Image (tube, rainbow, N blue to C red):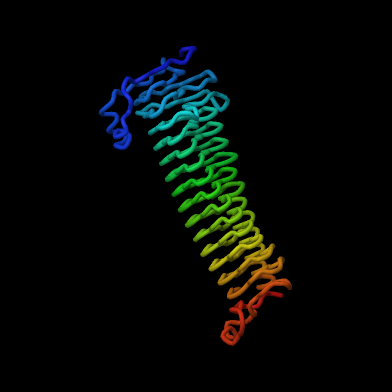
Length: 378
């Protein structure tokens, strides 16, 4: 092991057409420099293609590979990059002034941070990172694909405009997957972490799953969107900040509330079932449409604020079906039955359709009625 970082350079720059063609084409066209144990700690100062073909271990608390160049590709071909533990340095580090780092097929473990690529337009693909304080940190416009991060404190932290797909985070004690604003998260799974998926402002989360997390399964920032996602067996299933949108989302068997929303949130075609707390909770100016809440310990729908619209929803076998404690809300065209205390508990100062049986529904006038299939125990 050298005391001072060594510098490696590849004499040719990586042309744009090779970047588009992919790493395989680049490998055939450019010289590949192998990184050996004697090279570490290493500074890469030129663009090019680098390969790790054997296990590389660093016992000192230093950064193993520092990338000080644009358009660098590091491919693991059977080797791994191993640090001395969570108090050590960083496995692969890139400063914010650089761009175009690609890490492929990596096996990285035992670092303070496995990969810290703070520059722009970086890629991490088909890589596993485990037993670090922080698994992967990437900057603006990064792409993460087919990555697994496990047994860390924080799993993946991505900057603005990142794309994260087909990736898994597990066993991270504080945060699983954290994405900044305007990101895309697709087909990702986060489980057995503190908080599961945290999506920043305007981020879209689709076809993703959060389960078994002790904190919040999925947290949506302002104006973020979740569609076709599932959150179960977490502390709180889903927390939606102001103006977030939930479409075809399922939240069930969580230890707290299923869906907890702030202001001006849209909830459409969703399901909250068998949560120990309430099924769906809204603050003010929210719209909840065509959503089911079944078998929750508290209220199926708890409307705490004002200016909400609860329409064409279904509440069965909860503590209370619809509990409206705020005023100035519109509650119409809903269905309820077999709730343990009351099917409808709507305080004065709200606009509500007539509460009636299915047989009486066709005779009601005014707003669409709220149907009561079976009387509650009270």
